[in-house]
Amino acid sequence: MASWPIQQLGASGEDVRSVQYLLNAHGSALTVDGSFGPLTKAAVQAFQGAHGLTADGIVGNATWPVLIIQVASGSTGDAVRAVQSQVAARIGTLSIDGIFGPETDNVVRHFQGDLGLTVDGIVGPHTWNALVNGALGSTGGAEAAQAVYTAWTHADQAAARKNATPSAVAALFARTWSVGDGWVFDDCQGAAGHIFCTWTRPGGKLVLGANNNTGAPFFFVDEVSFQP
Image 1: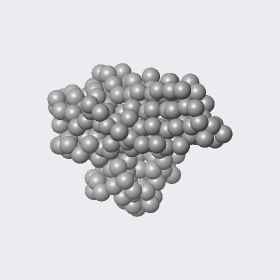
Image 2: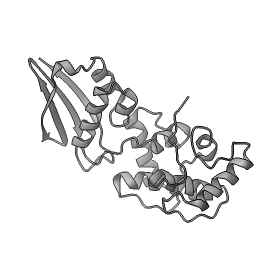
Image 3: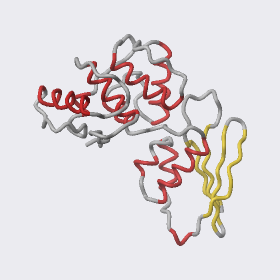
Image 4: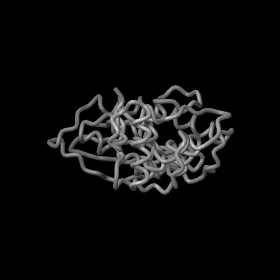
C-alpha cells in the first residue's frame, strides 16, 4: 500500500497547495495559498463526508487516493494546476495555467522516466504519489547525491528512490552501510554535465554521479561506483 504524506490544520507548503487545488477541482472555492487553515480543514471535512470517509479534516492515506484526479494531455482545470505547481516548485520554469499541453506533458514524462515509473504522460496514482512525497525535489546534482547517501546510511531505499534512478538505488543498496566502515565525504567535481560526489574510507571509495546540466528538468543520481 502506498504511503501518502499527512496534511492537516497548521501545515503549509506545496502539498497543501495541491490539496487546495484538488479540493477546488472537486467544487470548493478555496484561496490557494499553501496554508492549511480553518477554511481548508472545513473543505476537507466536507469532501470526506461526501465520499464516505472519516471527516477528521486530515488528508492522509485514506483521503489522498480519493482526492487526486487523473490528468493527462488535453486536461484542463485546477487538478492540472496542482501538477504544474508541484513541478514549478522543483524547477521553476513551468507555467501554472491549468492547461495540460506539450510542455506539461514533456516534463511529466521526464519525471516518470527518471523515477522508473511508466512513461505515459498520465498523472495517475503512482505519479501523484511521487509528486506529493517530494520525489526529484533536489535543486542540484550535489544535493541529490547527498540526499541519496544519507538515505543509504539510514537503510532507507524509499528515500533514496526520491532522488535516484532505480538502477542506481539497486547498485548502492547492494552493499550495506556500516558506521564502522568510516565513510567520510571528500568532494564533488563536475564534468560534462554531470557532478561526481565522493566518499572515502580506508581502502575504498564511493562515487555517486548525478546529472548537473540545465537541459535536464530534474536532478537525480544515475551512477554509483564502489572502488577499491
